[in-house]
Length: 125
Image (tube, rainbow, N blue to C red; front, side, top):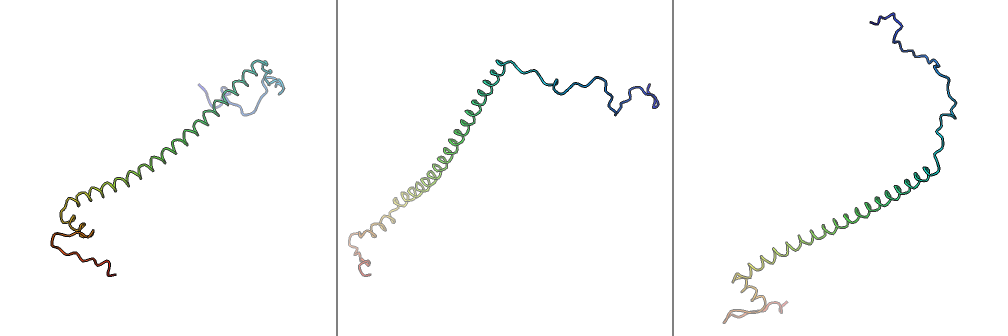
């Protein structure tokens, strides 16, 4: 048991030199052999080339995706306009099946029923 007054397991905040300090120049690692340095440089160059290639491919693919999204949006706008045109044409087909509408169109073009007299008022203006 440790008591307050005992000196066992006490942490000291003052530094005490336990071993002679080594000079800073001896803490350096010895230089690597030439083949190891060459191998590391080759590896670094290869990794740099790989990262540059993958980055360029990513940029190229991103641009391709954006251009295709723009083309898709344009095609969707075109589809919407064609759908509106199709609805208008279907409505025109329904109207052309109506006999009264056909008579109205014929009168506008200058035709009439047998025995009917057509007056052209466009010449008067």
